[in-house]
Length: 88
Image (cartoon, rainbow, N blue to C red):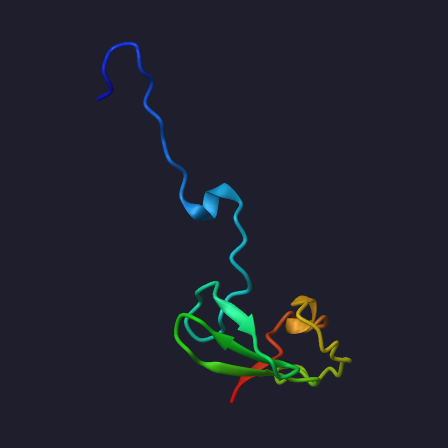
């Protein structure tokens, strides 16, 4: 309990503060997936698993063009919303 005349301050967790830590790892679910120096390759800083961005969705078979950039917009299938990342 705070002393008289002082209000209690609640510290928000990171998830509620709106801080974006990056895309989530398909393996561990932590938001620490980072692009590597190879095009279309990613590595989770938390669990150290490596992933490759594929152009064909493994779930529905939809084919899309891969933009080889650090942008994570192409990591989800536009048809079925499945992950386009596969472990390597």
